[in-house]
Image 1 (cartoon, rainbow, N blue to C red):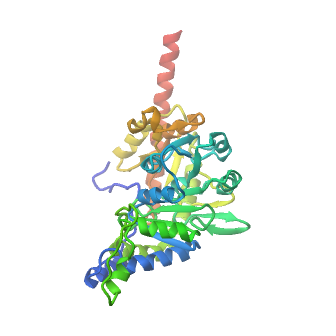
Image 2 (cartoon, one colour; image 1 turned 45 degrees about the vertical axis):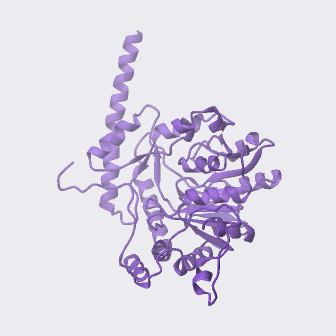
Image 3 (cartoon, rainbow, N blue to C red; image 1 turned 90 degrees about the vertical axis):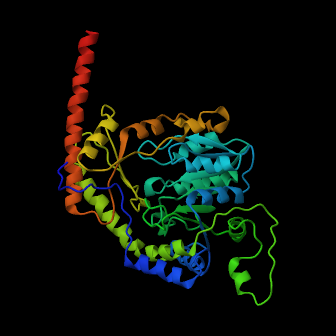
Length: 405
């Protein structure tokens, strides 16, 4: 890498003076923990996605935990989901002493294969936990219909999908509206909207929302706003086991500014993804992501698939040597040591597609501030890396052929 070339990151949050001023305003107000900014962020997020209720959380993992708890997941229950996801998806199931039941991903993408879900359902199945992987909506219509048919709630892990849309009854609707029973979002810095860290739950069910608000604050019967605003002394009660899963007003104030930016950020990312596809289409042996006709991704990540003969790690290292950061494709939870025990999960189908995707996919840099020059540099470096890897793979194959002969 030339000393004059800056490293191209795989992601970069868009944070500016507006977010800094919002944080400053909260600091000077004296109310920095969960308070009026959190309440405002919840109202604005609910309005944005079209949900009746939105409840802010400390992160998406805690959101997933409370979503599962709200629908009644407990010890010995099974939750149908994917291994091909960040580990938090299955961890949240195990926090409830339940068992994640893995099915494979679709053949032409990285989301759950809805056609495999019913073969995973048993009398112990109490929820379906689907993931909108990398911001691409999964086949939610089919999954919701399966849930209704079996009277099983559907929870959406929408960690990556803030701003993504799905065609529903002839209308484009945001992920997070009441399609499934509950949707869970992340505001980690890798996501399109960030609050440093944070999460959000959306639902149409007021009882779920009541539970979320109770449990996120230690099971406290009285909110901080009511207690601090009361003209009379109030003693709170703790009738249920709760958790410290709250978002702070500092985070929420930043989140409100991020939410105002979101339509522009998604539009820019969609434009960049289109430009990537156009430029990368000339590289032989590279499979590009594609949207189904019923989905609009926020393109939280841009994931490409290499030919089976190409060494994923070698290509990533070559790009890194050129100052270009990448990430491997989505992990597989069942391959991690934390899931090596027989009681930790159950695989209801072959997971061959999931494993293959992890081994042969690379996430390329994509962020709203990305320039044409940045993209051209990534594309040409990838083209050269793949050409080099292809030659190397061919040499290895020839050597093997000679040895066999």
